[in-house]
Image 1 (cartoon, chains in turn blue, purple):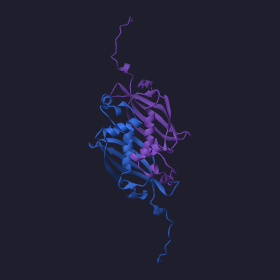
Image 2 (tube, one colour):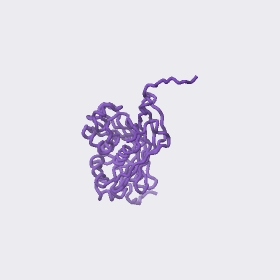
Image 3 (cartoon, chains in turn red, yellow):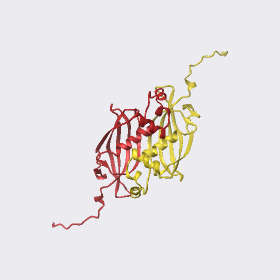
Image 4 (cartoon, chains in turn green, purple):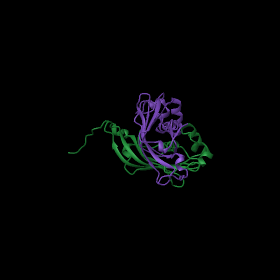
Amino acid sequence: MTNLYFEDAEIGTSCTVGAYLVTKNEIIQFAKQYDPMPRHIDEEAAARSVLWGLTASSAHTFSIFILLTTRLQPRLHVLAAMGWDELRLPNAVRPGDELDLDTTVREQRGSKAKSDRGIVRSRVLLRNQRRETVLECIGTVLVARRPEANAPIRIEKTGGP
Amino acid sequence: MTNLYFEDAEIGTSCTVGAYLVTKNEIIQFAKQYDPMPRHIDEEAAARSVLWGLTASSAHTFSIFILLTTRLQPRLHVLAAMGWDELRLPNAVRPGDELDLDTTVREQRGSKAKSDRGIVRSRVLLRNQRRETVLECIGTVLVARRPEANAPIRIEKTGGP
């Protein structure tokens, strides 16, 4: 597995992964545990909801986004997630959808407090097989710097004047 | 179960629910499915992480927040989740933590397109037993208007001039 470090996460760097098939069973099982509302677990009730049919819980869609971030190749060496801005779910996830994730680095800056890490902000797009966006946000993560950058600086004699 | 409709969600309306006990087993099981990183599933590796010990996946913390919204009493009659802003996880969730949720309505406005619903934005705080915030955000949901408000308008004759 190739890891990208903070130094590699230049603005514009893109990573893509997918597709992840979402089954009806997974939608219902997830929702029974974390969002047991009829629109996510009961097909008949869901058919009468404002979204006309069974849809994944928002928490489930978010969890699939996080799962796919762990499968990005190459993948940022993330130390911790810091937050998400402008998180939107413009289209529902439905049984049989196949989702892929696309991330693009928008900003990066070194940590002021710790020299071994930096902060990376990326544009996130989770889309289905019809290229409709099902989740979008700006994600902020704490990323390790390349270990060599922290090694003691070796002072080498040169033959120069 | 008492439902609050759009008309009831006045600015300042607060709802609270909890506590939800997070077990080590639940942290590991959730992460194995949606965030299989060592810091969430392997106690020894987690002890060496920047967070010094096993912590819940961000997706897991978010899912517990969504679960608790379904247990609020009284609870908004939510038709669909629209999005979240400024979502932050300032402290990690750890085994044995007991989380409670607090929501306060910040804004509300009627839907321009549909007269049977409105949009409500709330401040969300998920806190642990030490009153540390583990998740905070501004949540935006689509909420049903009270059904009576949609009934056909009855025109009554009055005796006035």
